[in-house]
Length: 247
Image (cartoon, rainbow, N blue to C red; front, side, top):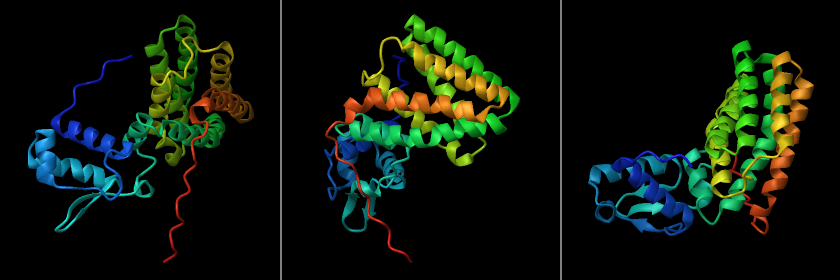
């Protein structure tokens, strides 16, 4: 796998605290003090303040006057943020997170493929097709790192090529899903021929503007992905968030 870039003190603090909260090591309602965290992480108070601002923006914590930094329940977390996704994929909730992401992709990506066939700029269509061909080559050679990078690029081009800005914001989530699936060992050493060919068929359909065939190929890919990963979430409970009260 590709080597990770060294983390700054700020990034390290965010990663450490985020991982501890999402894993349950710091459970809902747990209260921390900035001074305590600075000692624990061996960083300055200013680093802790910046890290807690990030975590608060994700819904993981809140700062309560005269109390400290309080961990919030999972229902407050931003489930679409790539960092939250990555932390969940690294913990005991990995299966449930993979299921949520796989089901989201199954709902969105076929629609994105159909839209891309209608609206994607010519250069985006051409690159998508070239990436699909490169995916087949790297997949058959067993080059996991190159294949993963190309897979992320392919689906990023697809989502952004739809012309739907809300679909485009899912690029980070899809990248974390594909990376997490690979890290978790839920990808074969060499991808099977059928999904590789379906990626080419989808890209070709988008290239020539056939939305029906593009959607059909995407649906095949998504169904295969769901089937291959389903073992990861066997027995994992589903999350039912409360419905916000109307103003």
